[in-house]
Length: 111
Image (cartoon, rainbow, N blue to C red; front, side, top):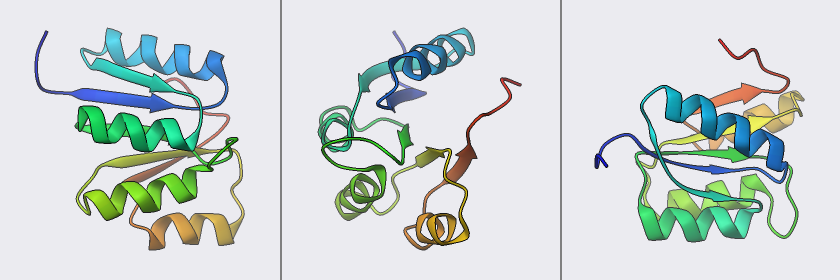
């Protein structure tokens, strides 16, 4: 197992977690953790310090925006890729303001 390209995937939809995991593993990434809510995201980021984390916006317990804030407080240089079906301008602007590394809008094309 390599120590590079370590990734965590967090989404409340288990199917999306599985699809992302499969795609990334085929692409040579090492999926070190998966979670299903924002609290999982913060915990997994703290535990594994991955090279990057895929994080859904709308989730139970703690949403992805709050998780992004907490992760960035721990490490301002954290690479956090936000995934959302909510493409309203205010949501996108908030993600950009919080310095999300990238924003992927669902539904997404696999390529």
